[in-house]
Length: 623
Image (cartoon, rainbow, N blue to C red; front, top):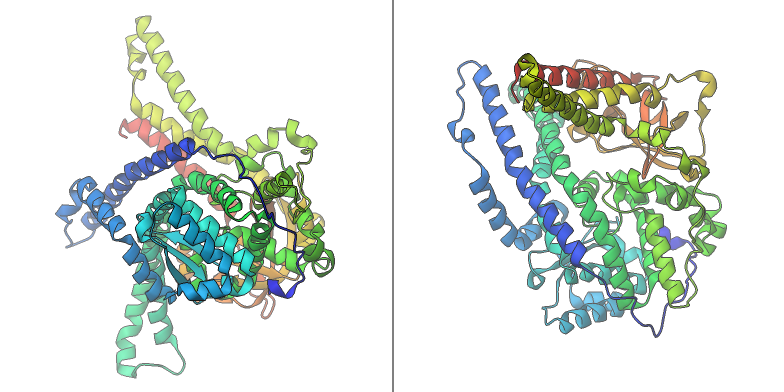
């Protein structure tokens, strides 16, 4: 684990003046807008789901629609969310205790592990006349920290045992300092509310998948765990339950991602504020740097093997100091690097080279828009600057380097963003048609005057524009993989560090390693597939070649069936804010079973469906 390496113990400030006072007005406005957007989206999303649920019931024989699903959900939804938020501190306690074994962390235990952490919390709360926060610990080896609550008086600071075991006393203090800083900024209330909101669909996804998979495994166990008579009855029922759980879990996971998306901007922004206040409280930016890097290594070494921990990391990722997806690849490549024990963790050289993309890629800020945390290299560079401000030796030798010459070439970035540009272009075309309608009206051409103000035309052009963007990008994004161009078993470190690469700069690779991740229905869409190689861990993106329903056909194979096995992956390597591989072919090395990915095919199907949908909106005149 990370503490087995010799870390460079860079100094900390002994007497320091605070780094400029933070201006929180912009953060407050962004927090308000984020909550407003989520409160606007939530009832409309619920109404959409209820209406379509009734449409499905109408199409079934005998069953009748449920009348209360037609009611406006706004009032009861807002009251429910408000009540849940008020009692959320106790809800979090119950949820984390039942699901993850949360325990109370006595203040005396924290003081014995890190007297500085207790002192920072005590002084910060005393200065604001706050109650000392409730301390909690999760019995997991993965380093985790988060702050939950609805008001400073009811704050819960939750850390994992792995974090307490991995970090040194001064590093533990920096983590607690940045957690209490989020209370001082009041962003903890917003993030707790958002996390509460997204937990509703996430728990439906998690436990519908876990429950169905548990029943399925019981009836398939050898020897059977239940009597033969009951088995003959329950076996068909469990298959039906599994088929029902699949769309429920997938739909709930999709809702979770939709609700989570508006919060990503504020989630990234708040991190900088917490880091800065942490350094002002402790005078130890080097300690926070080490803590973040050790957490990255700890995540890469412990969480891939623990299904329950991956749920925790994913469901609460908006609250953690470092994004699990960031830590997974960076930490694994860092530890796997042959230089790490010699110069990387001791003198920092290898770490700095791994952050090249974060510091030099000209398009990095656009490419992190789907991430919950800012680029780690960017954060460490700022922490580095705090050390220089206080004139102390820095943990890493980071500096702003000249960006790549490709800054002038925006063609690749435009191609990467083609579907999103298609949305804007579709709206522009719709508005242009409106303009023509207005002009025809002025010219007295009444046959075409109806074009002006027809909202069906405007909204129908949007999916058509997105469709054209997907079609335009598809051939560049998924080129044919030619055997001569394939890179066999590359060192992930070399691909990871390339500062000019963006996702559309795909590299065809063939790489072997162990397939790890969640098992069963909870991973049926490949939400958490990872390949553990000799040079690091990389996420995998998988879409079945034909249809997800094929996962339930007899003798069908899904990557989750091969979790723990050694496999050979052929696909497209992509480097964005986090790297990944789109699977074109997966082969089990033990029995040579193969399965094929369907990214190019389903991109075409999606684009065609959007074009057809847009055309139907325009032709029918119905929104």
